[in-house]
Image (cartoon, rainbow, N blue to C red; front, side):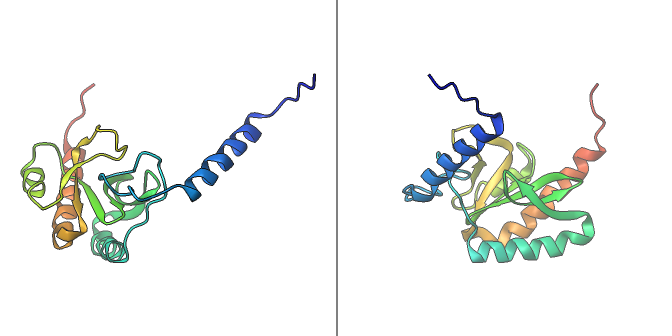
Length: 159
């Protein structure tokens, strides 16, 4: 019997090739059904309109310490290396703080909901996901997320 040993990296490469092959040919008809990733973690790209607004927001907030970055492999706005907003397909999620006035107002927008990046019914309670249909509110929400991040930075941490 031939007992061939494989390195961990070769096993991981083989598994990655198999996952990529499945995701390239998978049926993506349910993609975007929830605010976040779908169950098979397929590739999700922002719409041109959403990407244009994300880029505009990045430029608008650049002088306030905000930079473009990544969160879960998706485009994000970051302040002090912490994500404050994340772009997924035609939806932007904002970290505005649980039970804040901004959160309560944002949830009133059509299609807005708590951000659930896993798609498994485990939403991030500080995050609200707002669809492109309310794109005119994204800048206000991005600025509120920035304010929440600055306020959290000023709060003393518990030991």
